[in-house]
Every structure is written in C-alpha cells, then in structure tokens.
Image (cartoon, rainbow, N blue to C red):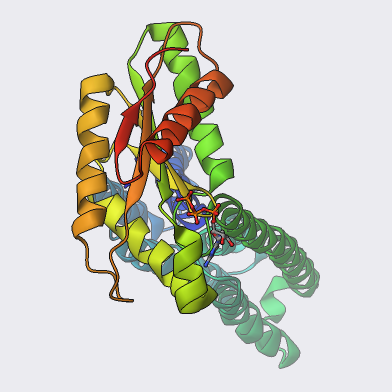
Length: 366
Ligand SMILES: Nc1nc2c(ncn2[C@@H]2O[C@H](COP(=O)(O)OP(=O)(O)OP(=O)(O)O)[C@@H](O)[C@H]2O)c(=O)[nH]1
C-alpha cells in the first residue's frame, strides 16, 4: 500500500554489527597467529604444543572466516567452534605451563596464554546474551584458577617459588576486573537496544492512524512534502487524490459510532487494494483519505480515482448498506507547494460533493 522503505530494526542492525565484529576478530586472530608462530619459532621460545596448535588454529580460524563469508545467516557455528577452540586452548596451555614446568621454563607460555584470555571473554560478550557470556567467562576463569589455587594451597607447586601465588592472584584480579568492565559495556548496549526499540515503536505510533492502521496525517504530510520537493527539483509528475465518504454522518447516526468505525476500517482495506506499491495512502482526518501518487500524471490519477470510487460502490460493507465516496483529483504544477496542491485537491473534492457526490472531479486550474 505504501512504498515507505521500512528501516532496519535495531536488532537487525545489532546482528549485522555483531557479524562485522566477529569477522574482524577472526581476521585479527589469523593475523596475530601468522606473526606469533614464525616469531616464536625463530626465537626458540615456542612451547612444544604450540608447534602443532598454532597451525591448527590458523587453519580452523581461516575456515571459520570463509564459512562466515558463505553463510552469514549461520554465525552460531563460528561462535561455537571459534569460542570453544580459543578458550580451551588458552586454559589448557596455561595449565600445562603451570603443572609441567617451573618458573624458569614456563613463565613465557603462561604469561602469553593468560594475557590472551580476555579476548575470549570479550568475544563472548560481543556475540552472546549477557548472562550466557558471563557464565562462559566465569567457567573459563574457574577452569584455570580453581585447579591452580587448589594445587598452590596443597603445596603441590612449590617448584615455582613464591612468585606463582602472587602471579595467580594478580591474574585472577585482572581477569575479574576485565569481566566487570565487559558487564558494564554489555549493560550499556542492552540499554541502547531497548531505547532504540522504544523509539521505533513510538515512531510507528506517531505515524499510524490507530483506527485503520493506515499512515496518518503526519506521515502523509511528510511523504507529500518530500514528493513536492522532488517534483519541483526534477520536474517529476505527481498527483494527489482527496477522498471523502458521502453522508457519513447518516451512517454514524444509523449504526452508531462503532458502526461508522467499521466502515472506515473496511474502506481503508478497499482503498489499499486499488493502489500500487509506489502510492502512499492514509487517513487525512475524520472520514477523509488522501492518496499521494508520485510518477502519476492526470490521466493515470483520474483512472485510479475512478477505480477507487467504483470499488467502494461495489463493495458489500458489513452493515449491509451501500457506501460511496467523492474524490477530488489534482496534479503537480511547477512552483506548487504542498499547500497549493492540497487546496486544489480540496476544491476538486468540494466540486464532486456539490455535483451530487459519488463521483470524481478534476481541479486542473489553480
Ligand atoms: N465513526 C466515526 N465517525 C467519525 C470519525 N471522525 C469523524 N466522524 C464523523 O464523520 C461525520 C462527518 O460528517 P459531515 O462532515 O457532515 O460529512 P458527511 O455526513 O459525510 O457529509 P458529506 O461529506 O457532505 O457527504 C461526523 O458525523 C463525524 O462525527 C471517526 O473516527 N469515527
């Protein structure tokens, strides 16, 4: 009925942004691994397991990035495999460094793996609901710090010296504070989504007629204003039809206000069925409707008006009585404003009423 392009909902935009961030995170991971693997190998500091795991992760992340390009509709596969792989690798690598070595041999892999762990938490907060990402980050932290804490408490890791308890406490605090920061950002994001949703609902309410669900006068005014501006700038054709139900007061008097409301609702459906996707129609007020037809000249507008008039006349309304409409038609003239156009349409409608109603009248002159 109306060609107003529906704006992307806030949730759609968020989903697209999440996809973009996921893509960037994957390519950042691929780039980081492409640098770290040769760098650590050449300098001889690479951990034994990383000789195999770095290339394996490189292959998996590249595969996930390509999958995301082919199937952007199924990002969950990427979130699941990518997130599980990164978190498992980091926790396993840190535990291996602690439990299989001493300070001298394991400090490098321990520090490097633990300072990548916040990436895993952050990625989860980007793509998952706050509660799920909080659970995942908490589990990841617990998987690392609980076994190490228990082992330290039981005196199993004395080979590390006094540095390990301090390092563990420091890391646990830093990771905890990082997760708190992420929770704050996630709260801000949720608040933003909710306010965007409320704005979208309010915009729809502000531009919709509650009785007929058609665009209301405010929405039609905006449409007409922008089409008048386009017609003036690009010399485009534009026509306006103003419709009014004949003797509507009598319908109200006979069938009550509710009966009159039913007629308005049914008429809006009859009207909508006659329009093209490029036409804009709505309730102008009371029992008056307006059609804005961009790209339609006078002959086309007269045809449309006659089609609408005949469709209403033939329609069997639920109160069982015939209903007719009078239609005033005019087209855009160079230099027209919205007001001059509407005045002509109104004058044409007045002419149709004066000449006996249930007819279409053209107002070609100013
Ligand atoms: N049921 C209902 N009636 C409405 C609504 N808005 C306006 N009306 C009624 O529409 C009627 C319009 O009456 P008039 O302006 O005299 O026009 P008419 O009876 O259609 O006569 P003509 O236009 O000259 O053919 C009034 O009785 C208004 O109360 C509405 O939302 N619902």
